[in-house]
Amino acid sequence: MQIDRSPLARPFPAMPHIAGVTLRVARAHYKTWDRCDLTFAELAEATSVAGVFTKSACASSEVELGREAVKLGRARALIVNAGNSNAFTGWRGRAAVEAIRAQVSSALGCKLDEVFVSSTGVIGVPLPIDKAGAGIEAALKAAPCGWEDATNAIGTTDTFTKGAGASAMIGDTRVELAGIIKGSGMIAPDMATMLGYIFTDADVAPAFLQEALERANAATFSCITVDGDTSTSDTVMVFATAKAGNARIENWDSPGADAFAAALVQVCRDLAQLVVRDGEGARKFITIRVSGAASDDSARRIGLAIANSPLVKTAIAGEDANWGRVVMAVGKAGEPADRDRLSIAFGGVWAARDGVPVEGYDEAPVAAHLRGEEIDVAVDLGLGEGRATVWTCDLTHGYIAINADYRS
Image 1: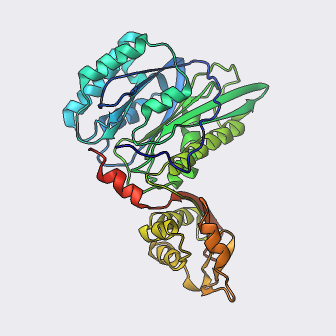
Image 2: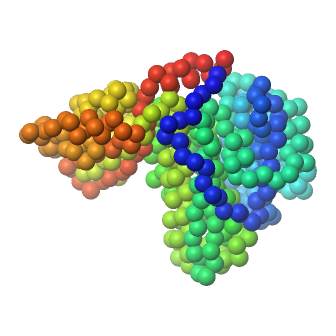
Image 3: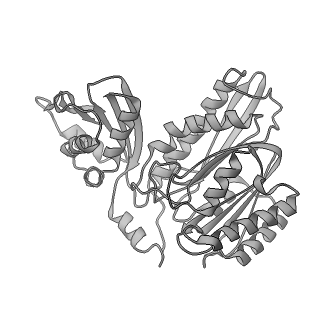
């Protein structure tokens, strides 16, 4: 099935070189498509690693093994298979991942636990070990490639390649960060709901890298949703090669720790928003800002209740300024709310204040705002200081068409 490029797409950016990272791609032929579908990232020795993974109770073997290996804090390689998620495949799926790790560790002379594997695609079909093995052999012999080629190889229903870069100063040393991601559907914030990989030449201790990623994730990847569905395979990882030569970041008191963490948040936010922009069938990018909640966590949950509401999403798709559906979503969120303090705005125009429609409310500027591609929804609960921002997209006929035909 041919999927049109998202109208919300962004061009692939110029990405910094990351010393200690070598990217290669190959054709493993997991599906009958004319493209590379296996990505191989070789990493310098002593590369630190951190990761966050899906909370799905039906996670793939790749996720299960990755969760354990990331605790050891070291990585030498990443392999990403596209077209087959290898989830819900029992011992056959685990055997495939173990075979991949063994093959790569032998080729690089590293430990099994330093090899990380991700797979994405159809659930319930064991990853063919022969195709994976042949793909890895081809990747080992392939010439190094750039960020966009690697990004294209990890995609499935993605309509455009997604990348983001940033830099930070650690003392007198400039460090670079480069991230790539795939994701379009089965996106809901239960960490991570996509496959994303961030590489940096900074020297960062694994424990700090893990804490910084978890903080960044809470404010970015865990604040997006396309369809409310959490995948079995989703992963976001950070690899730090230590090739920049900066003074090692050990903890939050280390020089440059805050600057590095801020750059990581920037890359994560950019990548997360790109996933929403490629939401299956999406035509509008929606930012939902919740303030006045009982806590930040409560604000986030209310924002997600709005973002995941089919009624809200279809109203925005139809460019209908139906703020009553936002009221409904706030009320069902299960969080503290007071009908008589609630205020709602679209595009900076308040439609309701303190539980009642604004006197003399003119819907014309709101209707004009909803005809655009960038939609802003603001909700103030009037209860406290809690606030959060959530990103989502509209729900269109395109989403149904893509998912009704997914395996065809």
